[in-house]
Length: 255
Image (tube, rainbow, N blue to C red; front, side, top):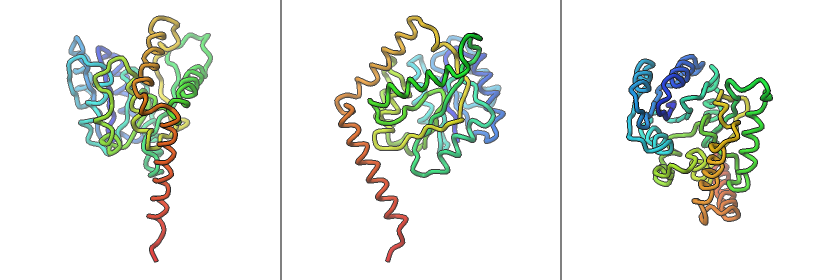
């Protein structure tokens, strides 16, 4: 299992994330930190101090940084965190069990809670936030979307979509883009209970929120007309039915 973490000038939070990965009940075989053009050397030093494999690139955006990490990952399973994510000790074990325990599942994604949120923020605010995110994208995707701060997938699945993802588009949400490409013909599962701590920044009603909405709309539209909802649903249903049929035929003893 490889864990990929894109980072840019976020050394202190990266240190916290790597320390949490060091406490996992199912430790990763490899941790890759992709430094997306940090202006200081701190992030690279933190990665080295924690035994992570450091990959550097000029500032090209999180989509490119994440993709580069997936490209060079050696593990058969690839997980993704953000530098400001805080995984509990059993986080990786829960995701791994979901993938290993069901061969029909190609990618998994989990939940979150907000770190250092105001006391006035309800305890389940992150669940509401992610629930709304999934509900809004269900019509466009036909399935649950991947959440970039907490997700994992099989390396062979990445190999099949690596040439299709939009690496150079800094405006899009890379996790939603990956959801379009993986979920079109493969199965993504939401793993309840596999939650990580994330920044409370999404709660702020500011220009950043409007930008996130704009980026989400952009990510959806650039996949049209190929993934226009009715056509996408039809392709997805046919593909999953074909896989189910093939699985039954393989498991049926020959005469």
